Image (spheres, rainbow, N blue to C red):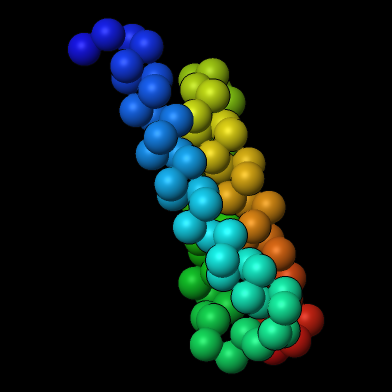
Length: 86
């Protein structure tokens, strides 16, 4: 497979898996309802995203860096709302 095609595949996957958090973040901000969200799951997921982000930086993979930076922002908003509003 050609490197450009592999990179495009990575960006497509990163875009889809990152954008899936946008509706949840918007819904959480809008309603402030976090009852159905597990604090521990969100915290562990955010920690995993940080590790993927560091890994992406170490191997200089822009799809990993971009996707995980944006995902971390979205998940951090949800996590902060969960901590603030229980």
